[in-house]
Length: 106
Image 1 (cartoon, one colour):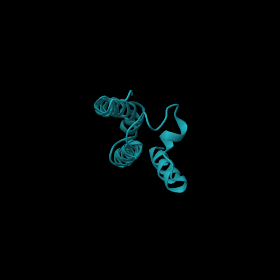
Image 2 (cartoon, rainbow, N blue to C red):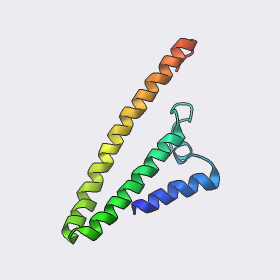
Image 3 (cartoon, helix red, strand yellow):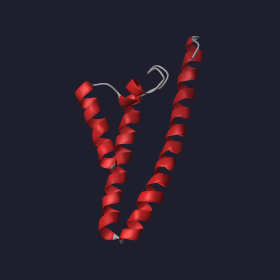
């Protein structure tokens, strides 16, 4: 399942040359810095999850694998979202300070 998310992000970008986040979210690309970097981070995260899922599926019992699918992927996704929120907050602070120096409003 996680590999299908990764493939979707990858092929959508390479076919349309547009960012998935920019097209389907309710904000403009000027509000969020480096959308390509965010898409790349999500793609790498899905690649990591898919690889970890396959590793656990082949090296551990079915109950451990199911527990990982139910609780582990959810936990890792929440941690990734929190880390990305801190990253975006840092980028927004940098961008707003740049605007203040130039005398523009955010």
